[in-house]
Structure formats: C-alpha cells, structure tokens
Length: 296
Image (tube, rainbow, N blue to C red):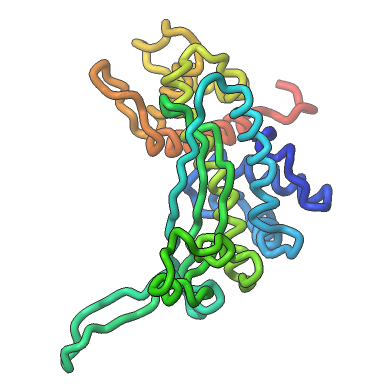
C-alpha cells in the first residue's frame, strides 16, 4: 500500500505517516467499521481527528493513488479504458443539512391523495477508473464529491439550452463539493476517499491473480502472511505452486470460497472477507510469540 500514498503530501510528516497507517489498517480489514479496523480507542480517535483535520481533503488523500495509477497506465502496453460512473452514498443523520441531500424520494400515498416526499441525506461521488481491455483495474484517475441540493439552476438551464452545450463550469457534475462542503460532509468524503483505495486494491488483486497468476506473491503478501496461508491450505492444495494465484485463493477460502474444481475464480467479496480474517490470524500469531528478551 506504500505506493498508493508515496505521492501524497498533506503538508505535515505526521499526517502523511498517519495516512499510510490508516490505509494499511483499512486494507487489512476491508469492509469493517473504523473501530474494528483500528482495533483500539486511541487509533480510532486518531482516525477521527485525521478525517476532521482542516489540512486533509479527499483530493490530497487520493493524490498519491492518482500518481501510482498514472505510473501503472504508463507501464501498460496497449489501450487503456477510462470508465466513469456516479455513486450515491446515503446516510441517516440527526442533522442531515450538515451533509447535504442527493435527491427527493416519493413515499407512501397520504389520505388527501398526494404522495409523501422526503429528501435523501447523502453524498454523490463521480469517479473515473483506468482499466485494461481484459478487466485489470489500474486505479482511479479522478474522484469528486458533491451534494445535489447545493446546486440550483442546471435543471432550469436545460429547458432553454441543449445540456450538452452547457459551459462545463456550469454543469452540476463539475460543481463539486470543494467550495461548499460543511464539516461533517468533509469527514465523510475523506473517509470514503480512503476506502476507494482499499476497494481498488481488492479489485486489482482479484483480477491480477486471474490475468497473471504466476506473479511473485512477495509483492503483495508478507512472509508471515504467506506462512500462515501455507499452514491453512488443505492437503489437496499443498503441492500447488506458491504463486500469487495460490495465495489469493487461500485468502478467498478464509472468506468462504469453496475452491472446488468446478468453481469460478474467487470474486472480490470473498477476498475482502478473507483479508479481514487473515489480519486476525497474523495478530493471533504475533501474540503467541514470546517477547524477544525472554528465553524458552
């Protein structure tokens, strides 16, 4: 994960170091809550302080990943596709105005005949992902966050002008949250940005183990992780080559993958579940080792 933060500069060595530690912790336990990922109150509190720090923003968090993505694109032979899509994140909050709203939803029909409507609290993220034609994700190249309720006028403009000819700075998709975010929205965007890198890594490993199964696993797994996965391998797999595919499938088995001869390759869900279990195994093995200054 170090390559994904090497190009990030938050203006403070301590913040840069915290970014790397947090990305490592979330990468070890993807999909888990922040307290579960950071394991204790001290680290969890430090994570909350990091997300609320005024010098931290989602673009600075992702800066290093964007640089690493560019290097992977440059090293790729052949065409690279840039896929883009918008994702909606919904939240339940006591003060939803501190985050913003994504849309108005129509609910049940009231007695007077009209339908109940309510605004959905949340953020939207528009991201661009570089990917090879055979499906290997090279990384995000852009990601922006915003709240629809902050921007007005685009719908009215469409009634007068062809929307494809609206000046780019007037389009909703370009009126990002950068200048209009409230504090809570900033923290959420920072957290989501960090999770984006974790999600990319799981997807990248999933596809890399399929496209280049003979890759050296030392580039991804530590020696302790490989030793534990070797021990967890079933007897029928013990003679298999110790390449990247072997260890990714071993992680997937920890996440519930059955690994039968007729099964399709493991997907992202069982792999990220497996990484969380692997982190627990590594921690358990560490705790069973006697301190270095003891004998016996």
